[in-house]
Length: 261
Image (cartoon, one colour):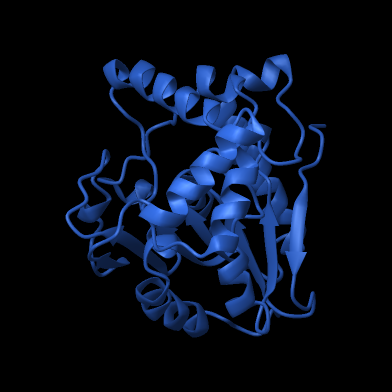
């Protein structure tokens, strides 16, 4: 059995489960503003994905199948927190977390009540992978000493509208990433052009205005997926414009709150 993940819990365990899946190089600690807004109504479950935060590192076998290991971890977590699907969870995912959210909803709709995908990641052409890996490695290197991390925190505080608490937890995650993830990262394709590649549960897709993605998640049929574009934001929509994000996400969550039964 794989070593269990570190999981951060907030709110009343008697409330319906809300699972938060973070992006690449982040951790389950990067949601302070969202947790504050949601914890009165939900039991929030925010894991550190394997190789992130204080969760276990990848074994030699697991690192050869990074994406599938993450997927297996997410399904196992959902099975646990929903009591085998007796109380399905709402799942919110950002970037890599959004990709895993979609895959989990497609593969195991019995465990999922509804999903929110914030600018979800997707597979990329082979010729782009190496440049992405190098770029991510250089990015993480900016946090490998306290002095470098302090400079990045200062830069973000001047260049972004992020809350200071969000910047601090974001920065704290970077030195904790298992760098072998980048060497083996390859996201499996999700065929969104077939019925098998569509979520069978209510879904909200939140994208930056004008975003072009691979695959083009914008092509989801509107009768199956609610799609909202947010202007003047980058990839981290929630952190770039908190009020615009919550204006579209919070009503969706409330509509699918359920009673946990």
